[in-house]
Length: 306
Image (cartoon, rainbow, N blue to C red; front, side, top):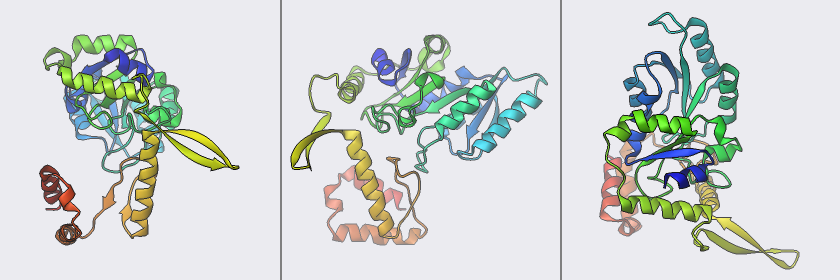
């Protein structure tokens, strides 16, 4: 499975874990120490925040997707060094997400890679919400921007979204992955992934890569062009993008305040009148929309509106 993940992402090697949250929180301390500085986006996930705190590294927060602020913090780290030891930092680690789960925004990866090369920093990219859903080949934000995956030092992702499974992975060069295998608490103390979950990931990934020997991951449609039938193959992720654009467009037409990038599969809707949520549930009941949901989905919806 790890070889397949590395092949899918386009890097040398990968290592998989049984829990997505722990992939961030337990591996970040393995990659940074008290002699390092972590420069983190202000909207990073809680698992990245916890991992940064556990690493004992100096942590600085830059404004969300603000490249000028990021560069300012990198320059300050180089000029002033470690305030604890009065020595230069041994490592500058930039931590960002591909798609931010609460905002639906897409990180400016090409600009971050340019800063990394300019100042000799490292990039930790969390692709939890973008892997399998973004890019021509479904390889996430790296694929979406057309960047070289080798320009991102640490590629992290989870299997809980696009792959309908559980767990997470870290991908990169062999030296990095071997170091994580030998030193990370997530590999030393955590339990391995169960075989059914691993098989689900393998099967889903093979469908995305076209290695399953079938056309399950493909759909053909007819397009009439100059009185001729042209067969155009569309992948499921293209359908997702089209549906997302359609959903966003009609939400805005209805007067909803929608955040995030138009290309993002995450569609955050701002609610400024929580007292109207109960009325919204009543309307869904009247229109008999809730009857199509499972009991668990109804409970989640009712809880989210409380």
